[in-house]
Image 1 (cartoon, helix red, strand yellow):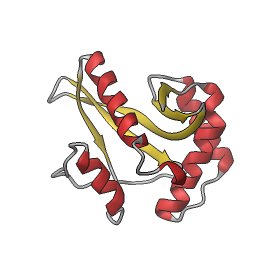
Image 2 (tube, helix red, strand yellow):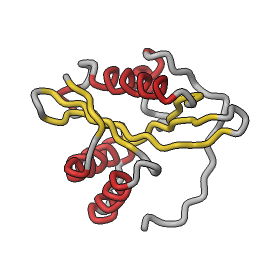
Image 3 (cartoon, helix red, strand yellow):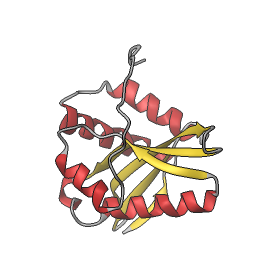
Image 4 (tube, helix red, strand yellow):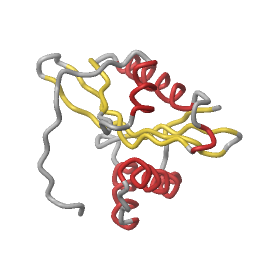
Length: 151
């Protein structure tokens, strides 16, 4: 298994993985045109986000995306994990563990990353168990949001 930073040629795969994740975890069918444009926008601007791709025998089998939040309290960055997906046949084989380990290495190299966070659907017990097994813990914060549309 290899892990690498995604590039523009990965846009179709990332969009496909994101669509599968949304359908599986939230029963939401995403608009592929909007989704693909969003993935391409992220890939074209490293200040917006970056993706890590896990490969087995040269084929993508998992991903995660990282976005950034500045913390004035910590004088550093919080990295937010989003768009986590692992192909069903490769789950429970260490794919996410590898992605998360690589992310921790990158954060340590950066030098000013003060934490890694993510949000997860309350009912996704399997994902929560995975995150906890890697040393993450449930935050004391609740998430609130206002949405303005998808495009």
